[in-house]
Amino acid sequence: MLPVPRPVLLAGVGLIAVVYAMGADRDSDAAKPDDCAFQVSADALNVRSAPDEEASRVDRLGAGEQVEATPNVVDGFREIGSGRWAATEFLVPLPGSACVP
Image 1 (cartoon, rainbow, N blue to C red):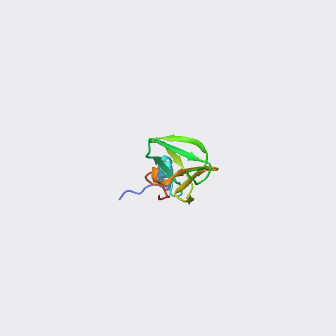
Image 2 (image 1 turned 30 degrees about the vertical axis):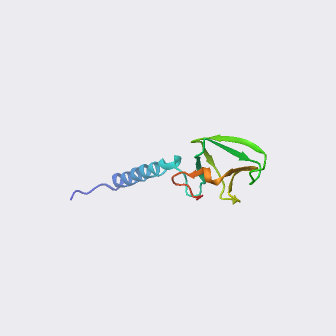
Image 3 (image 1 turned 90 degrees about the horizontal axis):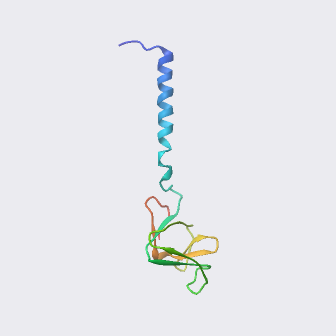
């Protein structure tokens, strides 16, 4: 076995640590475990001002749109922002999403 000089050994360990740290951040685009992310499954999904189908419409989402939400569900509506609610039946959790319908 060939002896490896201590400075070379330490430099190698340092290089491995840097490469590992750079690779650990690669999944930053994936949903994080505490994210609550969904995709709209309806052709058009009304966003309401309250968790009630009689509440005023504040927005409309199209099929395939992705939204961040909260875990808060009331009467079949999920909160997708302050004063923004959408019917849970038309929100499909994205892979890696921490929220379930």
